[in-house]
Structure formats: structure tokens, C-alpha cells
Picture 1 (cartoon, helix red, strand yellow):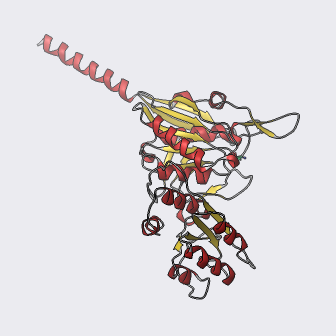
Picture 2 (tube, helix red, strand yellow; picture 1 turned 90 degrees about the vertical axis):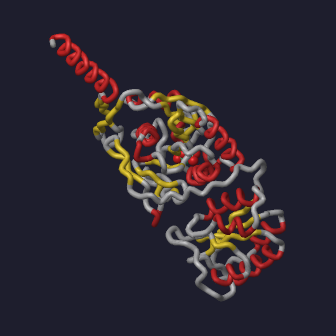
Picture 3 (cartoon, rainbow, N blue to C red; picture 1 turned 180 degrees about the horizontal axis):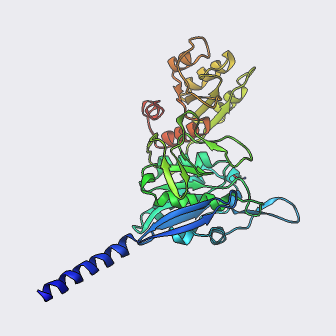
Length: 370
Ligand code: ASP
């Protein structure tokens, strides 16, 4: 009887020890630089490993005291050292990919970045990747990777609107939130996101909307995927695009042109005559152009160039509404593809990837299905 009691007690004590080891929660308190807000983060058991792939941008820049301009001087390691509490939520592996302003990014560089991120994600220990990137072309870069990455693990693009030497840099808080997002069960199926200032945007719909303000990225009518507050991801919607396309060896030449009142079509004609294989034209309104531009679009189509019509307007899609020369309905009838609500720069990348993969016009049109 006594022996049975001892065994029973031993069993209860072991059970308590196992559960305390697996489910112990620590409270991590982190103050944001901007709002001195206190975050409480629940940390359980073993920490996940998150890789940070650094590419450059304001997040890694400080003011040069002699010239007054921002210059890239912050290494990946320095970036992480500026973030208190990070070691409590994840183990971090830093991979320095490049150190360039995002105005210098190209689809070729994004191709290499896509391969690098996929390679990193093959490691079973890596939960997901945070890519630090300049904000100017971040919306395009994130979309390029969203289309071409093979791994389904979370990938979060992050940057900063204020340099690392500013009075209140936004980079550290943004990186902290991005890492939190990668490790968060609610955010495993968002595809590639652009996450800044607590808002999570799908790579497909996000745009930069302000040149200097920290609240610059939003997704217009499509809305945010989530919001990060108090150390937690709050899921807001499921509008993930999830289109995938193979990463080609070489990228085709595709030109993007914004049309304007009084446009005589010179630029579109020039693009056709200088070897563009595809054209994206940002028309006015729901996807309309004037008669002169319509004529050169006819010319482009006669040369078997694929023409995609997007819009200059921030919200809403391109629709086949107007039947006059230059109207969206007429443009579609003569063979132009309508881009839905995909912004011009992203429509250009999608068309480029479609053409580079040797897809037919019909297959490319399917990718633009709205
Ligand atoms: N010029 C910067 C860039 O690399 C702007 C930024 O990162 O916020 O895009």
C-alpha cells in the first residue's frame, strides 16, 4: 500500500515537471522607442529559429555627419543589437545578402534573392525568413518573391521610414514585429507580406502611399491581413492571392508606361520599336486611354507584343466598361489584357515572369484573372 502511494506521488511529480518544462511561459517586457508602449509576449518552451536576410535600405542607414545624407553603415548584427527582448522570442540567423538602396533593385536581383530565401528555408530548423529591404520598391520585391518562392514557410518583408540614427527609428520595432509574425501560429499562411508600423499587408496588394510617414504601406480596398499589438498577431482577413510561377533563367523586357491627358503615344511606340516583349499601360479611370494611345496599342498588338492595361487610380480595378476607341471594353476586344486591381509595377513583374516562362497569351491572361 505504502509502495503504491510512493509510486503514485512519483507519477504526479514527474507529470508536473514535464508540463512545467513544456508549457512554462515567461513574460517578456519590451518598450517601443516611439510610444514607450509595454508589450507582453508569451514565450513557450524551445525558441524557434528565424533567419534575417538583409538587403539594405533606410533601415540599415545612418546620417553621415559631414554630408548630412543617409549612408548604409548598419550591419545585420548591428540591426539586431538595437532590439531589446529579441532573444526572448527567437533564435536569429543573419544572412547578409546585399547592402543597397531599394531604388537600385532589379528583377534580376530579386531572382537571386528568391533563390537565396528558398535555400535558407530548406533548412528544417528555420521557421521563416524576415527580409530587410528599402521601402521604395519593397511592394514590388515582396510580390516578386511571393510569386516565385517555392517554400510555403512565412516570409516577411520589413524596412524603416526613418534611419537608424533618427530621433525615433522605426526599424527596431518593425523587425521585432516581423519576427513575432514569423513565429505566430495565426500568421503561417499569409504568403509573403509587407509588415511595417504594426500592419500586415499581402504582397499582392500592398503599395507605398506616403514618401516619409511611418504609416506608409496599405492595401487599399483589399484591407490589411493583420495587425500586431501587445506581442500578438491579430488576423483581420484571408485575402491572400497565392499565385505561383516558375523562376525563369532570363527575364524578358517589359516596359511600364503611365498615360496622361494629351498623351500622343510616343512613349508606347518607342517601347515597341526598341524591343519590348510586353507592355503595361497605366490608363486613366477604370482602364481607358485616349485615341492616340489606342492607335499605338493596336500597333503593338499587331507586332505580337502583349499589352496589359492597369490603372493610375489607387483603388478599384480595371473593367471593360467603355466601348469607344481607347475604352476598356474596346481595348479588351482588340486583345489587350486587363490587369484587375493589380498595380502597374506588379502587373509588369507578372507579365515579365509569364513571358519569360514562355507562357501563351491565354495562360498569361489567366494569371491576371480578377
Ligand atoms: N531609400 C530607401 C530605400 O532603399 C527608402 C527606405 O528604405 O525607406 O528604398
